[in-house]
Length: 614
Image 1 (cartoon, rainbow, N blue to C red):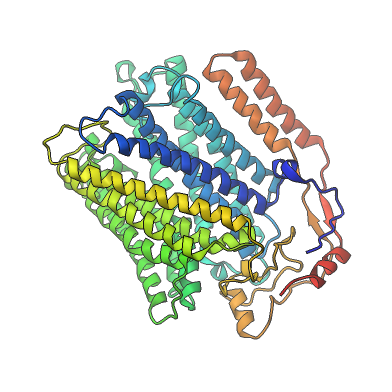
Image 2 (image 1 turned 30 degrees about the vertical axis):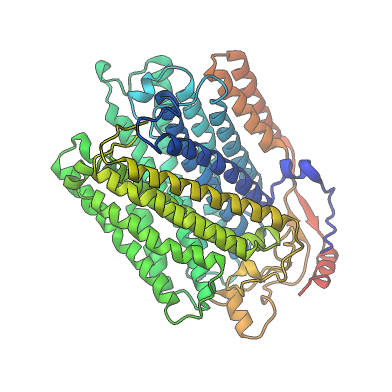
């Protein structure tokens, strides 16, 4: 590909630090999310080593509490969330036929805010101790926790949360305004639909968390007493605020995973997705109901039978649209010419695993039963069957499926299958026994247990399973390293795909589509291929393409907020003021500098089209 853009191109590290290209930002999200995923995994391994035998002293109780808190917080906010944004960035603009997201500068700012929020949180290990109040930061544990650990938690999530919020708004605007001609809402690929609903959930779920974190900060710094019952506060306020955010967060994580599974199942079954319209409405309904059920995390706090019953019924109602999705995936495979690629293996493994998480979710939705299960290892097992068995397995399917589009290379299928079987078997060995540990009375969040309680064997099996998951992850890393040394994928459409992202030549041009495609139905690229066309029918003649300029300002703005947060944690007002001033200077520069972007001229695009490899 010989794109000769009419602007000065940056290369090397500066190219990545200043990029506003959604494809590169997707890769940055993937690398950063993968890095935090490994950190969170190491923290989990340390906990499982501690619990491999009774009365173990591998780590102290205080360290275990920190590992517990950091594992949950890192995996939810700094691994699963950015990995979702990685695929949304890499895929959504391509699937809707757009040349970028609506606000490329904001997109870059969202990434750097998330990244420095994660760095700030993890610095706590080195600067005075990690947070130890659990990933839910329940009051009064969080308000009375000594040391700066919880302050790192509050400000790290606050900064990254701003990045997530502006990222979600960006995708809402992008999907509403930048779809190619002919791509109606009911012709959008399922992954784009799930990204759209997820972005809506982010828009409404993150502001309550932001407010809650402010209140928690005020309680810790100024004794504001929002959550202090001795002075008129109420600890339940924090629980309500946290779960008003926290329960939609589960669907923020799981819906894009559903979308990835839908794309993979349809492509490798060689069939159109069964019940597309039902899948769309199920996605929207799941998003809506996700906001109605936060109290099922609080059945035992004493809200009374009426409140508990209402939220129990609402929780169980989510099983209906979720069941629609499960059956539609199965009906898509039914009668299809299934290709068991690695991506398809992850998708097929995902379905029964997630169903098990859903079934135990219905069990927990019964208030009387929840009184027994609450704060036991049964909840841990359920939660991981949903988040790991649902979100992570779905993201692995998406990784193997979209890796050629993101990196112009395919991952090795043999290593991919080794990764699948070790991780999949390890996952079930780890978490399936935890259902029984919970039913046998083992409480969660404890750093050890006594011998002679019949808990030894199942805990041992659980820890061995965790080692298998770690081995699977190492195999994935080896696969990625090997693929980096390979040449390009044999084709720009290695899976015989159905949607627009596979209609682009490789390496993916900076401007995505030389000509905006004309969408003539659902599975737009498949329709063109069925009609005997080699590519998409263009909706416009070849012309100049407008592109945004790269910018270093998002990075500096994020560093400014990062510095301000460090100053707040250590009561160094000078550092805080300098950080805030740096951020405002960047905002001011962004406001006054006329940045009209640049154009890739028509002749250059035509040169690229002539050089396209088929």
